[in-house]
Image (cartoon, rainbow, N blue to C red; front, side, top):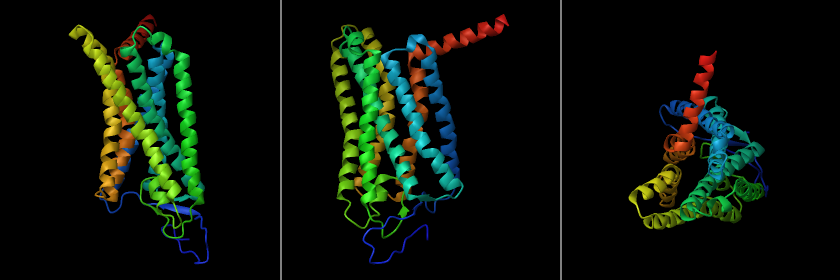
Length: 323
């Protein structure tokens, strides 16, 4: 069977291909160097996010709802890049562009699942900052560690169900034309558009995915910062306002880094003005750069994390001197 196209008998009413072919960047010079660049980013992402998770786990003073949410974002970032980059490297650096139907669905599920969890993780962090600034006296009674864990569990469960439905609907499609996926992984949109039967339910789920995991979390984040801005105006001293705003700075940067590329890519695609290489470059960078930078920004911009690192280094130095 040709990996890039499929010729099937006309009398077949339902065709499930054995393999898909992931096209990736086409006719782009030095494409391999770009894939190596993504591999370097992946290693940095793994190191930085594991560092944050381990630091929060080991430091008792960081066992709070805020840092449970921060470690959850680090875990989501780690899983999201792991769901995409290793397969991407195998596909394009080792010329393994063909992928089986079942493996494609698995790749689609995990890539979209962890991307959705990333978005909801940013919404959870904004919820934490909203409570801390708008309801400072009630914060510790409302936002306990156990409640934060319940929220995170509900996010994962809700996302599993939604993405599972989205992916399982691919199995009702018949692929009697091309089997070339015009993306760098088994992306939901490029896959269902290859079908030759009705894919209206898939379009509905694609719209639901975009709404539930991009627009709704972003709208919630904007609402919380509107409320936070109103609360800051009520603080009498400028020093108090700056101190409260400082706790939100890192989160604002993370939100901008995550949603801006997605918004630009979405708007350009709606206007039908992007070519496939530009879309793949934009999507792959927006899927890999923020997970690498998130833990670095949170560490550098958060006083508690920096103090924990200094405390750990100080302990290690004292331990070394005693030896």
